[in-house]
Image 1 (cartoon, one colour):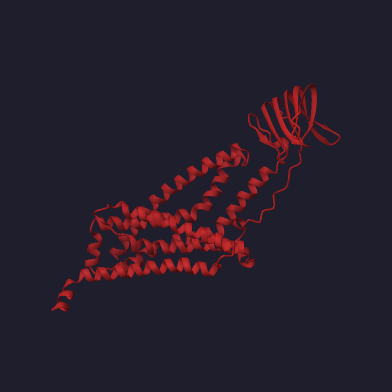
Image 2: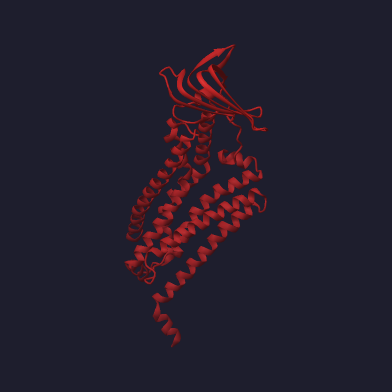
Length: 366
């Protein structure tokens, strides 16, 4: 009982600390990336925190698995360095005896990884797609923001307005560039306002210049105007059709077993199986070598984790290209890693038994 409780208590402290550190790092990186997308007009600036929350939800299975992996490695490394492992081995506890407390501690994390990978992550990806489609589906007028170059919905115009008025129907220092019918047009004006003529919306510019350049011949023409009307698109485009497997529910992937769906399903199941294998790998691989220091186990943990997840991503690509069957890949990769980790664990278990019973070797020699 003391063995179980002390080990799980230390694992809980290490896991909590590592989870806070990783979540903070990921949130910082995602926040910077999302702010960059908001500045380029891909994400609504008022929804930055919401989008960031959904993205972090998608990363949570990986964060939880890495936190668990590092927590087990750090705890066992400290116990080896403090000679606590020797005490437990001398009292009859082998390496396999640690597997029970580790799994009893890890099962809530494994359950959370399963729920996040199979249910929550697809939902979060779908919500991010809806937010981006809704923001990208605005009309040209709704896209214009003071002090920023904004591309139109069709990608044919770029608008810039230095500042607008309180009613948002007029503005000053306007710049528009467009490419239509083999011509590139650059228009600048001191001011502009919105007007509706014959059921269509126009941006009426006052006191400006217009430069037209023919793309084929390179000829240019400059004109000055006192008032000029430019028709703008005020109709919001509908959401783009996106059949990305990342936003599909897991049940849909099972009911429609296409190559892309099987690849996505292998990724989601791989996250769950990798979390379980990381527990066995951490127990089998962790040890302390005085010549290389205590950080060697942590370096190995990060290297093994990165390699494992790169193999899962590579397998997803192979399955999508139909180079390998999904079930065969899951068995080869995750089953093979589990078998190797278990054999490694059994080999170390036998080595400790031999070293803990030297009198048996002496009797056998006699």
